[in-house]
Image 1 (cartoon, helix red, strand yellow):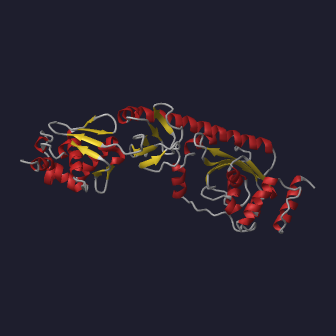
Image 2: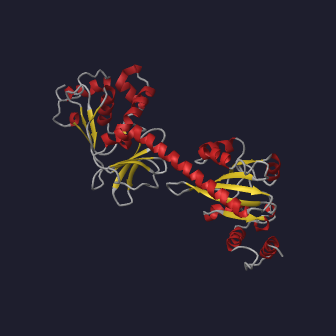
Image 3: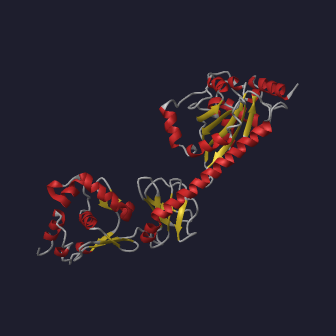
Length: 411
């Protein structure tokens, strides 16, 4: 009995209720069968689910980290799928098939068993396959004929390798070669493994280009903002630039949004959103973890200046007025209220929101919204009990600033 016959016999014994592996199948295949049986999958059940169709598939592709490397994979394995009967398949980390390439005949055959974009090929939906088990084990994997748990997959021979984020190590998906023949097993596994490494190299190169763009765009602002150490982060928490160099780990996982965090070494820090692309700035404020005081000076000055634990920033005239108004109203102000305080009856909330978005890089998470307000400890020269508030921003014609001057003792 050949190896395929041994696998057939081993599968029959297992599906008949047996638990011993025997000699007909590899340990990793048998372990996958056990996991599949534990989920309740019936080997002769219906075809894999197709939860993503049409526009949902296109959206998943557009937003997926592997989208930039799909053209590289498609081109590098083009000759392996041209007139060979081989299919090239790329999945995401959950097992959704996202891209499929091959000759029309094999593609149609594969589509009949839902081997098509949008289908979910995970161990808890289809059992043992190269894609599903490579995801489960996080390593290259091959499955041939009767080694598949599901009966509909028995005509195929599959080889898949996982693709990981080259910096964080996060599983991104798999690259797979599938055909109706199990010839050239070692070559196919080598091809998909090499393709996965090529994809990771491409991802690393794009990551480095992205980090260079971040440094070019924000490094000067980082230097101005920081009195201690900090970093520019991307959305995965990867440190694109640290100041001073080496002061933070290369990766800070778990960054989800703005606010205080505790670094892996126990230091306290603050995460701030830099722009709409959700990159972050991490700042270690003080040794004791306390928020730095927002300081503002506007008495006798044409334009106010602001400090948030680091160097002083010279504000624009409009930002000087905005910060003064927010500091004077602990309960906060809506965009509509700020528009009236700045422009009177002609003010528009949209104009104010645009100005506040330009102010956010200076104040970061200390600028609260709904309503807008300054968060945390703050100190302003014009709010001191003995201050001559009539000297606040003397060139300003904003109604709200005029009202603050008139509220001064003796004003």
